[in-house]
Image 1 (cartoon, rainbow, N blue to C red):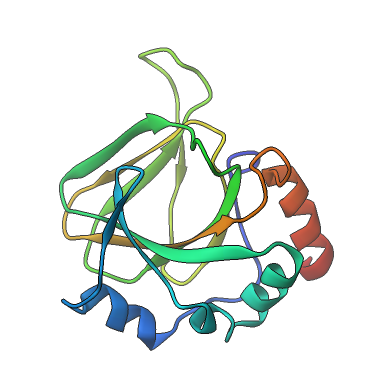
Image 2 (cartoon, rainbow, N blue to C red):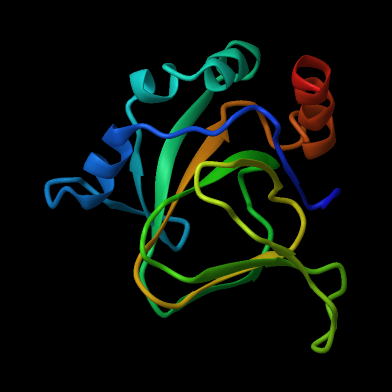
Length: 165
């Protein structure tokens, strides 16, 4: 729901190596902005036409954010990302992502209902939070190399819509 997020009509993405990464006990998870994360090898995302095009326009690093069961990432805006592309990796979990447009204690919210394999343009500069209940939650995400003030949600949305409709 614009200006918070937008489902991208670029086709779904799945690569079995993502499952190998998230379920492999040898995967090296690091602390990253209150998440646990790991880098995704560049060649995995470059197999996909959309990620390949996106990288040629706006270079990025791809990673997986892991959120343990029964955890919450409270209301925030990202300090280093203005926009990203997120995709839920299928796993046995129940989680919710919300955006808000008012700082009051009692307010309405907008929910992003992730569907596994579907990619979403995500506005990291709008206040958002995540609740995760049962099982670990895994999100494939991008971190663009451009400054968050240069590559904005609106700018990237227009570029993707021009290319993919």
